[in-house]
Structures are given as structure tokens and as C-alpha cells.
Amino acid sequence: MMAVRLRGRNKYKMYLALKQNNYLESSLPHTMMWSEKNFVSMVRKYKSVVIKPNNGQQGQKIYFVKKIGSKYVVYINKKRKVFKNRKSVSNYMKRVTSKRKFIIQEEVDLARINGKRFDFRIIVQRKERNLPWMVNGMIVRKAGKGYKVTNRRRHGVVMPVEEARKKIHFNEKEIKKVAHLAAETLGHFFPNQKIFGVDIGMKKDGSLYIFELNRWPLLGGFRSLKDKSQINRIMSFKKAARKI
Image (cartoon, rainbow, N blue to C red; front, side):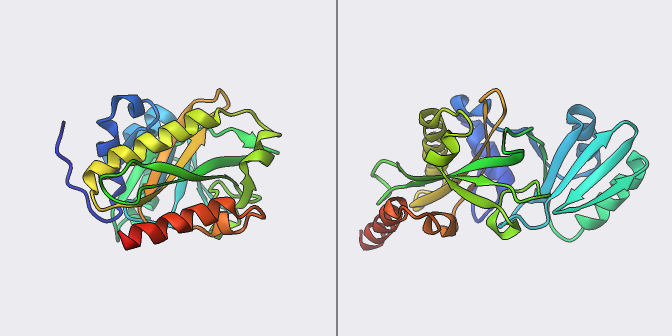
């Protein structure tokens, strides 16, 4: 097993760590650190990529770049910029990524509910480092009108799993299994970690993609549900973990 030193929110190193789990490897969108050379090769290969801060959170500074014919379109929240050629889009991306480290990820063509992209946020917890990980919460996050990201800070809408299931088919058991394995895998690298928020997307054919694991997940989406059983379970686990 390759040694990966992890700390903070380093998304690229988390990706490298998750890749070491053979079961998860096919569920990881191809990811590289930002460089102009990597950008060119990724766009050439996938036609559509996502560029986001390596240590970002809450859906900030995320750029979707899509090649359409000979032109390139960059989507930033609800705005879009069109560039005539690769050089001009490369120059723009170099400028906006100059002040911090970014990663490039292949864009996954997500399944949709009522025409809106959606993904799953799963909360996986353990009470102490030697106890097993447990899946304690799962919600569906649907993108707001005109947005590609599903984050609530970017007008994303939270749906209970039961409601989403009426609109689209998905394998809840497999989603939870992938989230559990991801938390277990990263838990080896963060031995004191007690909680992960796992973000998983799904294609129309049902294949799953792990976008990222958040070590400090916001829980507002769970609090917003009428049924409080999930947030109560999450908070009771957090409380127990603090006492141990």
C-alpha cells in the first residue's frame, strides 16, 4: 500500500488514499492536480471537467469547463463565459487558479430529478477509533435552478431519500456500502476521525461516483428534514464520541 500522508482537507491526497481500495477505484472520478498541461489533457480526454480548490468547502470557487466544438464554456454558479479557443480558456483558468491549489476532475454526467442534477450526502460515524463505522444519515441534494452544484449555500434543495425514491430508482444499499467503505478506508489515514460526510453522485445507468469526503460536514440538510430521526442519531453519536 502506497503511503499517503494526510491532513486537513487535501482532496487530492484523499483521492489517492481512496484509490488504494480496489472496490472503490471504479467509483472515483479521474482527478489530477491543476496545471495547464493536466488541464489540456483532461479536457481532451473527457470534454467536460470540474476545477475546484484542493482545500475548498461549501461549493466555493468551482469551475465547470466544457468543450463544445472548437469553443469552451466555463460555468461559475449561474454565470457562463464562452472562450473561442483552448489558449484563451487556459489563460483564464490560469488566472483564476493562481492564488491557491486546485484539482481537476472529470465531470460526471449526473442523473436528474425533475431535470435537476442531484447527489447523495451520507453521514458515516464511529464512537472511537477501534469501533466500527456506522452509516447514520443519508439525504438527497438537488441542484437549484441554473446551478450545477447541489450545495445548499448555492440554492441546493434537500430531499428525504423516501421522496427521491418515488422519482428515480437507485440502490440505497450499494450507496451506503460505498460510503461506509470510503469512510473505513480514509479512517485508517485519520485514526482520530469520528465522522465523515460522503458525497456520492450517480449516473443515469446507476453507476456511483465518490466526489469527496468531508471531515467536518455541515448538518443543516439533516436538520431541515421534518423527520428528525437521522439528525438525532447523528448528534447522539457525536455526543457519545466526545465522552469516550
